[in-house]
Structure formats: structure tokens, C-alpha cells
Length: 385
Image (cartoon, rainbow, N blue to C red):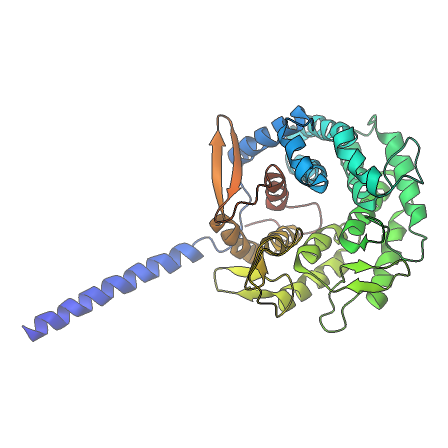
């Protein structure tokens, strides 16, 4: 009987090894990232386009989100725009639909529920007709205007695009080198959006404004990099001195926009960010809000909840960067993390993603961000295989 039991054990362990091999094989069977197919994108666009059509009145999804955090309403419109612009670049038949939806998103961004919160914190001193002075608002608005003009050269917003671009470029002569998002708060990530918008204006119209981004990068390399990690700081003061250390949620965001005006510097930051803030778990990769941080807690409005220092925005924005740079293996590792933490919600001809485990209550923003991250951008990167 002993030989029989020994054989039985071999069979048992053999089955376990086969099962383990199948699990590992499944994890590695699709080792590089594949963007979502057109049927899935169609369902996700249906959801976001409906949200934008409804506008930002108090009883709408966008209006309710804006009441929680005014930035989230603006970001829903802007990141939906960036996703649509990237999709239209890849799918020419989508251009008319993308142009129409981006035009509606701009109209909503100019309405009181979206615009006024930024007027209250930083009164207009620069523009007529009146717009907020906050670079957070103006940067996203100007990049949205550029995305629309890219699809509609004779855009009805072309004059606003020209005047706003000229104003932003002139304001970057300020000693701080970064414009204010809020009083006494000059956040670097918000400025990268505005600089990307100026680069797009130069690309479309031949204006000299792209030089603003080149000057900014030259200054960043001498004044705004952390001496230990070489990563871009998060905030500066009115004299252009760094006042807040690098943070994952802000680095991941900034890298994507910097790539629009200096792809070499952006790629360098991407590589340093991965080296300093991330942990590879084989088939997964996680990013920390700060290097060496093992906190567990609610975090703040930017970092979101932290688990051993790892954050949702820090990881999600790194995913967008990996897709933009064509780092498909890393993108797949990060997409697995996002898939684990999200769930599909289908209603009729619409689909969106909810968040598992924690109740963040950030839709439709989370869907706009995920679609933007899922779609490769227009920078020079290899195609998915």
C-alpha cells in the first residue's frame, strides 16, 4: 500500500503544479497591454457623452460631482476631451462625433457651475470676456480649445483659443515660472497642462508659444527637481522656490502633459518615478505616493486612500504614462491592478467602471480618467502588439 500512497501523493502534487502553471500562464498569456476594443469604447463613450449632454446643472451627474469638488467637474470634461481627441486621431470615422462632443464639453466648461468656483478663489485680472485667472481652469480650457480646433480648424472658439494662448504665454514671464492655481498655491501639475496647451497652439497655428514650455523645462532641471530622486517637485512659491516634495499623484499626472512639449524630459521623469516610487510584484506593479512611505489611511484629496503608501491616483496616472510611452508590459501590469480594483457597470447601451473595496463616489470623473488612460496618446510611441 505504501507505493500506492506515494504514487497518489505524486499525482496530487502533480495536479497542483499543473494548476499553478495554468494560473501563472494565464497571468502571462497576455504579457503586453492591449487597448480596449471598439465595442467596449462605444459603450463607455455613450455614458460620457450623455453626461456631457446633460450639462452641469445641480440635478445632473456632473452638477452633483461639481458640488462635491469643483475640480472634478472640470476634469470630467477635460479628460473626456483628451480621450476623444486621441480616439479621433486613431479612428478618422469618429472625428465628427468627437468634434461635436468636445464642442459641447467646452460650452459646459464655460457655464457658471464649472467656471464660477474658480472665479471666487482667484479673481480675473487678465482676460476679457471675464474668465478665472486660475491656471488650473485656464490650462484645461485652453487644451480643450486646442483639441477642438485640431478637429475643426474653423472652430467657433478659435478667437478665444488665440487670445487665451497669448495671455498664458505672456503670464509665464512671471518670476515664479509657474502660475497660481489658487491664492498662494502654484501647483506644478496644473502648469504642465497649460504648457501642453501652448505647445498644441504652436503645432496648430505656428505660434512661438511652445518656447514657453522649453524655457520651463530648462528652469525645472535647475530649480525644481528633488536632489535625492531627481523627480519634479509638486509646488513652488511666488519666487519660484520649491515648497512641496514630489508626490506620485502629481508626478504621474505631470509626466503625461510634459510629454506634449518635451517628451525626452517626460520619459526621464517616467523612468525615475518608476525607480523611486514603484514596487514590482511580477505580474503587477504598484506606485507609492512618496518614496519609502508605508502609511495606511485616508490620504488627502489628491492621493486618495493609501495602503502601505500605495495610492490609486499614483498608480492610475502611471498607467496612463505607460500607455502613452508604449511601455506595454508595464502598462499591462498596471492595468491588472486597475481591473482588480474596478468593476463593470452596464446600463442599457452604456458602460462605466465602479470602484471596488472603497466608496470613492467620483464617477463620472473616474470613467473619464480611465478612458483617457486606456487610449494611447499622440506622442511618438510604438503600437501595441
